[in-house]
Length: 430
Image (cartoon, rainbow, N blue to C red):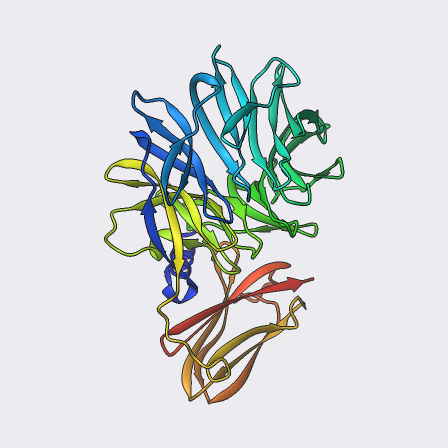
């Protein structure tokens, strides 16, 4: 990415008008040690993760308004919680008395060992409201995905190769993770439905990995990209994988998606520093720009988001890594009449070879209208002039500023006028 493109992508992220919410931040503390990390939050606001105890080991925790609770282990030194469902049931991993790593299911105050299909390591990553658990186990030199339900563990297979891992499950029983195809040369994001494994493909590189799925069947994760060896977060829906971009660095990853389609994860900046980020129907946003200034926090990773928009993850404060809770609060933007000053976006959308963008102004004003690709690179300036009051139409013929044809895919139209800005997504077909 060129320097000018990087500056444009950062400007696109940092504009306050793109943010629809701001957040209050809360330090979730620890269990007597220094470090903690939040990995999941359920609809009732219960939060799980792992935290240091005195002596340096890590234990799984459950946090709620009453504080942080140590969930213990399976008799060994350490544990970590990975997911919590609507009923407060929890899954994760824990050491046994002999030092082995096993998956656990925590229910009604009891930590249950999930067992194994071999004598190897077991890790439980997710569960749904029916109590169905997914994860992976080691079988010899291979890792294999499993589903556990009612005390029975079942290997759910691969895409024809040797390895697989199940990371997330929704309330319809759809499972996502990764699996190795028959050629054994790569891992691909995989969706298991009704016992059948489906290859979700990549963003052009040799590998991808699905990390989250919502009840609408939208999948998020990361994928390598060609021709550069970078990986970006993706959203997959109805057979199409979309690049979610980054905040200027070479890496981003999407960890979770809620029923509203809000996605959280992490992204590096131009200095290779990881930032907690949010995607919500627009360009990627740095969550560090959406918390009150002067808190002392730097948010590195957003791990999960529930349907109320509550976000959990890990960041640094006072030189230590702590679990955080972000609670959305109403935006301070002054409401405006939609018909008076509005950007309706593109129609038709998707557009075959081009489209028309519509906006309205209450009075004459200068308008700048630009198109960006999903990496935040400026593609075309459609308008940079004065417009009269009322509705205006600006046509795009599907070409870039240099006259070349823009490729089929997702673009963002950004309109700026009177100190305000809007972003609308559009799809170009060829």
